[in-house]
Image 1 (cartoon, rainbow, N blue to C red):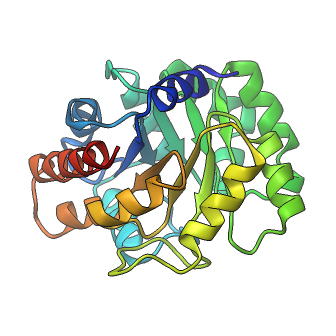
Image 2: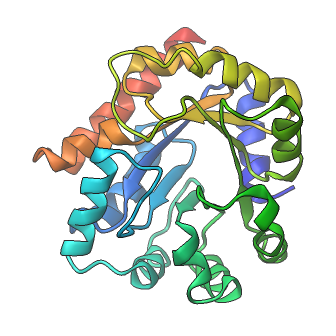
Image 3: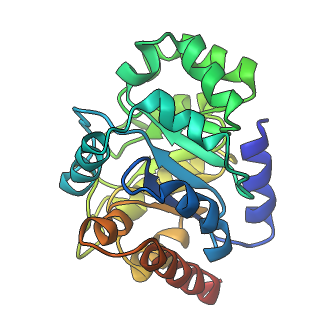
Length: 259
């Protein structure tokens, strides 16, 4: 069991709904400070996205966030190294596309992530059938290889994904790209239930979790939520890192109030 999974299990087993906010690396000059401050706002871990020119599972908001980071001169290898200078009090999970992981070599990417203290990696466009090398290398480095289970997956495939995923299982709430939504997808709660049935590994749901109400509804079925686009929209619209921290704190209060 990885350190990430141990920590999330401990918090879950105390009755806490898990909260994992997302930050696009390089989106602002102060992004590292924001990642470090999120624990104080109530985060149980932080997902850090590495910008990529063709983010296929990301909707308009995270595409814009990625484009802004790249326009600011952000480069994945340097962004990962910057994490090494941050003393985070909660685990940091990287989200990176296959090309970002495999172009320098899986071993090189994972070594750099391990050196920066990264606890887990999500590669959303890497299918289970092609993940053997990635799983082996991350396991050797003590990093959790976090896999995604989508609404379209059969029960057998969800079971296989749960058996291979480390740290947590990412339950995709809808068959669509990421993005802010006025209402939860009809598939959000049924998918979370299906994944929970297959595993005792923590299950976190994401894609379209856009408000405290969404978070509370999903966390009643899953072990917690990942919130991304609604937070990055604040920065894209000119808000401060403080506005993101306030939004995360509001999510934390709602989740704690529903416990």
